[in-house]
Every structure is written in structure tokens, then in C-alpha cells.
Image (cartoon, rainbow, N blue to C red; front, side, top):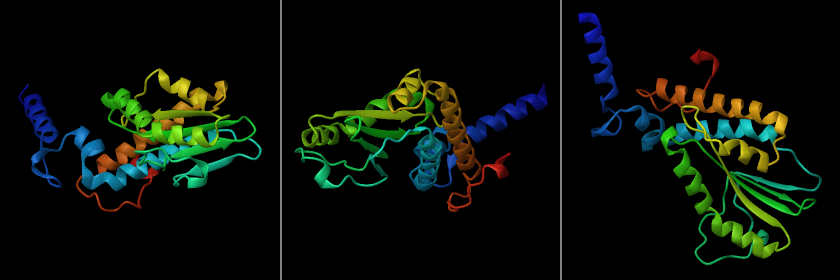
Length: 209
């Protein structure tokens, strides 16, 4: 009983340990380490990009399509809308065959912020979608957030979003699993380096298991 009490107290102390990185005003919680610490932003970007890499093979291509991945959309692909400040979504697919423009934004928020993050991604690129619609009025323009929690959680809307970007029905479960694996292994990597957050280039899934 005594040892159990000591162990519980140690876990409590670890969970509420003050951050050595962000200072004594910040608690080193799981949320802070995985999603809130500005000093770990580069590591979070690596996790984000691994989720994106897991997604890309499941998105089918069409003849003559144009894809922009992590690039600013050239101005000749839209008519500028006043107030538009965001023109670099994660993935943009212009399918001239289907007359369709798909703006895909990937997010890996803390699990309890999945719904809020989904809405934020839509709002962020609403003006870009409007600007591209002005350039291509005959095209269907859609914004599709792909949001997976940093602990692997997701909402029912994820499967619908995957279907909307062209993932085949029989591949949706497999795709979801790949996204979950990428998010969770990325978070594990960030967590295991919470005392040493500098080496961004040593990501290895195998060494974590």
C-alpha cells in the first residue's frame, strides 16, 4: 500500500512538473509537450508531415491534374479576394478532368481539440477557396480538413473527409490506421525527447519500440 502511494505521488509530480523549456510558469503536461510548446514546433511539424506522407498514397490522381504540396498557390490560379492572407494549404489538387479543386489541410491537434481544429482549418482557407472559385467558376471548390488527434483519436467525420478527397471506400479503414500510426508514433517521438527537443532529424519509428 505504501509503495503504491509513493508511485502514485511520483506520477502526479511528473505530470505536473514545471517545464524546463518554457519556464516555471508552464506545467510540463502531456498536452503542453505534444501540442502546446512553441519550442517543439519543429518536431510537431515533422509529425504533421509524416501524417501527410501517410495520406498521399491513398489520394488517386487524374490525367492532367495539377498538385501543389506545401507550396504557395501561384496567383494566376486565383482572383485575389480582399483580406486573403493564407495561400499555402498542405495539398491542393486541381482536377481539370473532373472540374474540381480540392484544398486539403492536415492537422494533428490534441485529441480534445479535434472538432475546433477542423473548423479552424475550414475558416483559414475560405477566402482562398472563394478566390479560386472566381478564377474557375465552373469548378467545384471544396475545403477538406483531415484531422487526427496527437493521441490517435478522430471523429466520425474523418471517414467522410477521406471519401471526399477520393480515397476508395475499401481503403478508408487502412488509410485511417496509417494516419493514426503516423500521429501516435510522432507523438511518442516528441514525448521521448521532451528533455532534449533539439535533434529534429533523428526520427526513427523502430527505435521507439
